[in-house]
Image (cartoon, rainbow, N blue to C red; front, side, top):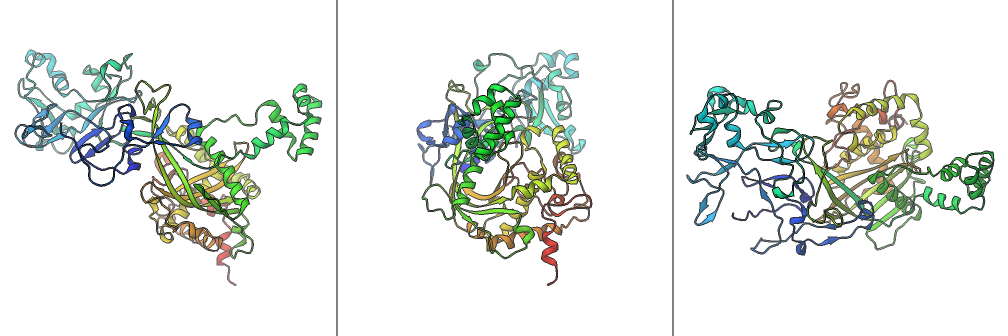
Length: 600
């Protein structure tokens, strides 16, 4: 087979064209094998201790890359042809074989026509496996095959054709696979019916297309489903990213260490919740400036039981940002440079400025993105690792890219935010999304829609849309990172809007220069003005059922949605009413526009 030379952006090798994904290139359909097929000589190792501390054993490696024209020995990623079954666009022949052109293998039929990949493949509904549909076997099954011996015993492998019958309209019934050896024909309408492949005796092979049959230890019991080759659900990537920052210990961890080191802590533990423990906790709290409840929680070992990987990473990032904000001007020459800016004396609406706890100009930040695995067909299907070789348990290789960029960090006042989200109407509004998230198959991939998360997430989208006009970056080049969680010991309330790229390095300065308080406050006001007038109002602002799985309330493409590559949750968990207010709920910033519009 001739090598197919085609360039992909480095970030595309993580998602959407990472390990296990189907890639369409110049009429060819290919699939990316796992990292055990990589030539590690040309895949440099990437260092990110914060990320590897959470992933465990293994290595982060950048996919092979090159600059300029590709030569014979140029480092490249391997791809397998999938699906192997193709049909000729000239003679309609259906085959797995490949023709020759001037003595070399090529993707052409013997008649000279180009071979086009079949549009349907078979995906395991829960095991995340994928395979070719055995078209010759399928064409000789069905109702007619049981009544005709010439069909059951046909071996004319070169007589299979794929037709589109105009007289049957434009539906699946018009797409027919026919064997001209025995005369049997079946339409795609029979292929996509529920349980169709199982009735035809076609089972899951329990492997990926590039894996040898010897790699299957046990047969897969899951049922196969015929799906279109380019369907979005065929590949659901599981990625994770971390900011490469000095790992700071969250305040609660430092406080817990001080509590454990207090002379009275042993007596609090020994009393095990008795009256002496409560008295000792009060004394420790007075000495260290913490709450008695925090002392008792440490004594009970309950200071933080949530082990979510992404939240754990964000805890360290949040602590690092707080330290940078308190330090003011950052003179370090590291890959994490943040200037903390004061809000004192900044002109603007007090109702907005009073809710902000600080602003950080992120002049330089390094982000590492890695692919952990992928699923197929169902968000709850089995997760397939990115390394299926001999080292998959003890030293897997994770595809990763490092990106450099700039951004703006916003911290919100915890006391004011907590007082707002404690209101009954606010809790009821966010409770709608909580109930729908619990019933959604995407629940495990989405943050818990607490009021603060929905409000700050929506504000981040509004700010991204406004920054796209002022920063010089396209909206799709900007990304968000939301720090909004009350379940952690250290409550978080902040937004990071940043841009990062692996080629241009995303440090052009157009975003960070807007992070000065004098420029950012007017941008926030302008973002709220934009959100107050949606082209779909009054339908949008009065709605509480929008988006995928109805996981958006008052938010649509006319006001709050951005590119899905910019959003952590795929354009879900958004609501303008929790920002601007509504008939039954007070918004986090509902006084800002009224104050701005007030006549002088």
